[in-house]
Length: 299
Image (cartoon, rainbow, N blue to C red; front, side):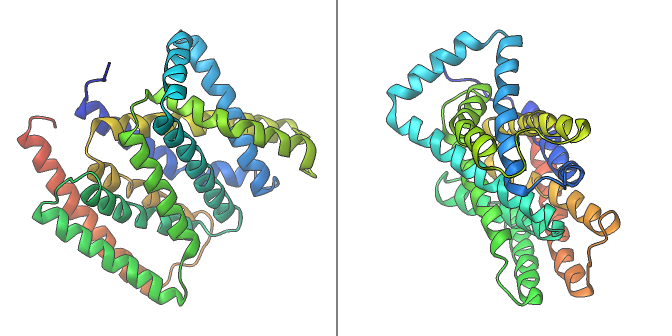
C-alpha cells in the first residue's frame, strides 16, 4: 500500500538531515588517523548493523522481509536499490576523502552544486515546474558555482562527482516504492560484505585495531550515517524534489563555516563573491518556498 505524504514532516526531516550532514566533517576529522577507504568500509558495515538493530527494536523485521521479497520479484526495483547503494557509497568515499585531505571547502562546493543537479532532474524527469522566484534563485546559484570553478582554474571534478552521485541517489529515493527503513537496510546490506572483506583481509590497518576512542567512533559511524539518511529518505518522499534540493544548501554552508573558522582553510575574495551569488539565490528561493507553504497552509 502506498504511503500518504506528509509535507510538514518532510520539511522537518529535510532540515534535520542537512544540519546533521553539515556538522559531519567534525566526526570524520576525529577519526583522521584511519584511512579514507577504511572509514568508508566501517561506515557501511556499522550502518548495516545499526539498521538491523533499529528493525528489531521497532518490530518491523517481518515487514522488512516482506518488502525484500517483493523487491526481489521486481527486477526494476531491485536494480534501482542496487544503483542507490553504489551511488551513496561512492558519494560517501568522495566526501570522506575530501575531509581527510583538508578540502572541506571542496566538499562544500559539491553540495552547493548538488541542488542545481536536483533542479535539472526534477524539471526534466519528474516534470516539476519552477516558479519565477525559483528560476531566479537557480540562475544566481549557477552563476556562483561557475565563478567558483573559474577562480579555481580547474574543473572541480570531486565536487561535481559528489553532486551527481547524491542527486541521482536522491532521485531513486524519490521514485522507488520502498519504505525508508527497508531501503537503507538493503542498501547497506548490499555493500556490507565487500566492506567486511576489505577490512578483514586487505586493510593494512587491521580490523578494529585502534584505541578504544577510535573504535567507538568507527562503530558510531553507523549511527551518524543512518539517521540523516533515514531523515533524507523521509524528506524525499514527502516534499517536492526541488525543495529537497534547496534545503541542501544548509549542509554546505555549515561545512564552509567549519572549514574557515575551525579547520583553517583559505577562503579568498573571489570565492566570497562567488558564494555571495549562491547565498542570494538561497534567500530568494527560501522566501518563495515559505510563501508557497503558507499559501497552502503547510507552514
